[in-house]
Length: 397
Image (tube, rainbow, N blue to C red; front, side, top):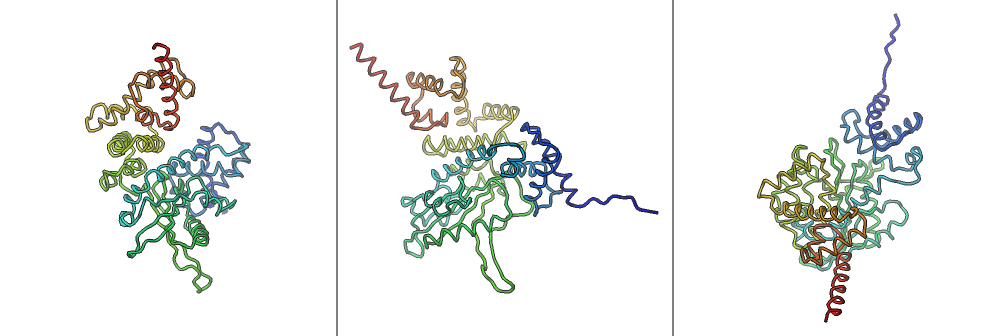
């Protein structure tokens, strides 16, 4: 008697695991590739996840990797696109993280590398991003979220210049250790100074299989690279409550809080704590605006979660700073609607901001804090308002 049972290979099982999640993404993004192209897209995804135990991955993790693959050249062509579309959305997020490290370099090292922070002379900081682009050339390894920093530190009672290679990484990559080694070699070869490589992973997932923070190489029994290591910071590995208690006076604690680990039901609470924290600890309006923008991008609430968040800050005096912030923001939105000004239109925004500045209700710094707009843009509007006031007064002399 013959056995008619069909054996399904692991590869086929993985394809079956990927397909329904991919279909959800394609439907959401309004893509309709034919059957052949869809199978090719699945193959590209499986290639990226070759080292993962795919059957154990959650839908969210698979969905995350699908979006990464959809911005690769082969899939762009399969979808009939002319350019990347999803990386553009991520680039704004990367820029916010880079702005944060520039503005809060001292606080960053005080939070994650407190011993080294005491040895660093932050007045000597030089950002060498242009030099990093020149160094890497067209290798394709330079990204928006890369930074090269030179700073003077005190080591063994001697002042010394060191380099810090910092990256914010938005996705898991099991070969990231090799990338960091490549970049370390290039930077050291160019500058011949000590290099501290740092990779901060900001992806929203818990890792079952960690990314290695070291790299080695052998040929037979001959050691080529014994043990290159870099500093790996995985924010999602930090418990939110513990993270908040480590350095509550550091504004970055609250800026990064939404990227730590907490229960899904606590998303409104985490935002309330984060917003309240940055408003209490930031020393100027630019810091507040930068971190608020980072929080708003890192933790996008649903309509229901947003309602819970507003109820929370309204009813709990502990979050009075956040309540005041949201009240002013709501006022600005209502004024814009009453004036019939379309949100996002620069002309309408200028009119509204001019009226607020004329009324004396808010200063330039306060508007920057609330809107997250560039300081120079608001200051330019303020100067025009002042000029108009002077001309008006001169006519009535």
